[in-house]
Length: 463
Image 1: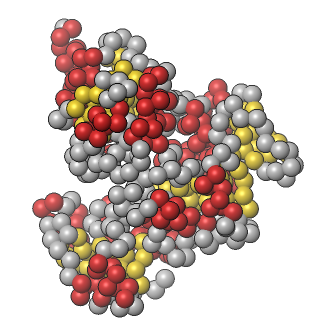
Image 2: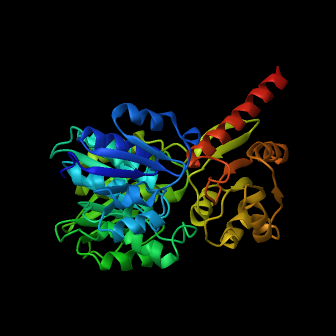
């Protein structure tokens, strides 16, 4: 993609936007870095873009800036129907996602992972498996580094393992993964997408440019995922994430669990991917994520030994069912990335109970009543925070005690006060973080800091 001398507007100055602006500047583009927030509310690296040659347009958007550009690059957090983007498209300006920009400029192969829940675990695990196999692998996208921050120095042998969200995919045109992994589909981001159908269509763009030579690794137990995959042209490899599922018909390629092993059937032969005893992650749904990653790794050339070795070493990713501490026999787990109802349900079901669940934030769709059955069996109390706390009280208050808390600190302290040895305190928000925190990672770090503060307090009391 020729960028030298082009005028480019990058809108949204979070992690991906900054990476895109820096990338464009390195490629000789004339860059305007735009954000509705003033400089005081943005990270220091945004203002430092001026030292590299960018012009800043902060505090408000000017439609003329967008319509006068050759290219507009959109960060994932920016709504695709932003009026200035609509105006730019109307003026014939090409408007693309940061993911699309990175894809057009990279060399190598792309494996992309999407779904409502489990993307980060699957992406990190697939990267670990390919790294164990000795490949030049670069992991990023919606986690870690933005795609444009991974491109430099890539070759035809490089494999990009990318977590891709609906926000990123809706701004793609040429994006073409050799292996696309679609984990599951349930309502999410309905504060951004007009409907569940729009959300699903954005996700389905992962298959849009695949050909008969590519692979789609898809959840065999999710009818929505299967329907979207059938509209694509790639070869399908279904994975069966339930440990108790019976083996699929012998005629079809599949990844599945049998006895105490994860297995892959391809070209009529069956092989073991890894024993369940090698899995170090809590929750059966995370074993399903590893199954999907292992199947994709084999399709990308990683050997069985490398796959199993990586599973044995893999301890998960930060903010996904992350064990934080044990204080006085009470375990604390951080699943701040459980930002929707389905993710929170799976998080809750990963533990036998009794659970004290810290939940809430900015509601973004889904039915909170769907958590009632799991909480009735495992829950001891819910500590509700953020803008959604009253909604949570209304939805779940008839099932178990729900305490509305003014802050995350209060929620952690009240959970600790109610907990007994053998209980688990779990952060499973079922909501986005943007009412109280910059992102889910900031929320997860704040939770861990509150737990560490409790730990120090208890050590002091014990001393």
